[in-house]
Length: 403
Image (tube, rainbow, N blue to C red; front, side, top):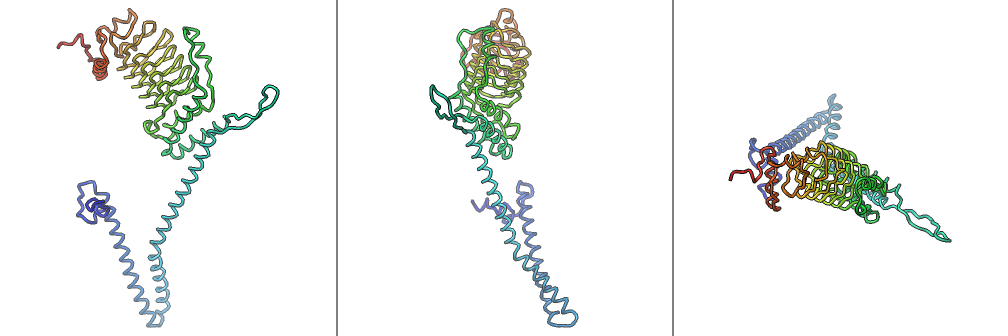
C-alpha cells in the first residue's frame, strides 16, 4: 500500500482534514483516537500527581497517613488497570475469534452431515427367484430430511445460500439421470395428450422437495437470484407442485415441466428454451423477459400470465393452450404457428411478430398495420423487435415508414 493511500492518511493523521470530501468518517475516527490517547495521558498524569501527593502525606505521618495509604492503594489499582487494559482487549479479541471459529466448525459439520445424508442409502433383503439377496436402496426419508436441514442452514447463514443452491442443483441433475422425464408418445392430440400429462406422477419425493427448496431460497434468505444461480438444465420436474415459487434468472433449458403446477410462480428472465410444459398450469405466473424459444406449451394454462418482453420464438402451441388475459407487451412470436389456438386477441395485439407467424384469418387484421408484412432475417428481426419494445404504441412497421 502506498504512503498516499495508507491507513494513517485515511484516519487524517498525516494530512489536514478536508471536510468537503468523503474522508469525513476516517478523520472522525482519527480524531476520536487522538482524544482517547489524550484522555489516557491525562489520567496517567493525574495518577502520578495523586501518587506523589499520597506518598508525601504518608511520609509526613499524622492523621493524614491513613488516608494517604488508601489513596496509594487506589492509585495502584488504577495503574494496574490501565496497564492491563490492552491485554484485556486483546484477550477479548482472541475469545471472539475463537468463538467465531467454533461456530464455523459447527456450521460446517452440520453442512457436511446434511450433505452426507443427501446420498443416504440402506440395505435390505429382497426375494429373487428362490432365494433372498441383499440390495441397497436410496433412503428417501433421510434424504428429504437432509434437504430440509440444508434449507435451514441457508436461512441461518444466507451467505452460504449460493453454495447450498449449487448442491441441490447438482443433486437434481444427477437424480434425473436415474429418473428421467417421461417422453410424450408420438401422435398424441386433444384428450389423449391431456390424459397423458394428467397421469404423470412425481417419480421421487426428494426431487420435488429439492426443487421446492430452491424456489424458496430467494425469499427465505434475501440473496439475489443472480447470486443463487439456480441451474436446472435438463431436470425432470414433471407433475411437481411448484406454486408461488421463485425461479428468477434460473437456467431451465430442456427441463421437463409437463403437468407441473406452477401457478403464481416467478420465472422472470429465466431460461426455458426447449423446455416442455405440456398441460402445465401456469395461471398468473410471471415470465417477464423469459427465454422460451422452442418451448412446448401444448395444452398449457397460460391464463393471466405475464409474458412482457418474453422470447417465444419457435414455441409450440395447440388448440388446448389457454391464452386468455395474457399480458405480452413486447413479447416476440417469431416463427410460431397459432392457426389452431383460440383466444389470441390479448397476445397478438401486444406482442411482436412478422410474416413467419401463422395466424387464423380472423386474427390477421389485428396485426396488419402493427407487424412487418414480410419475413425478416434474424438480424433485421432483432432490430425491429428492439424498436417495438421501446414503445409498442408508437411503433411503425417498415412497410408504413416514410423513408
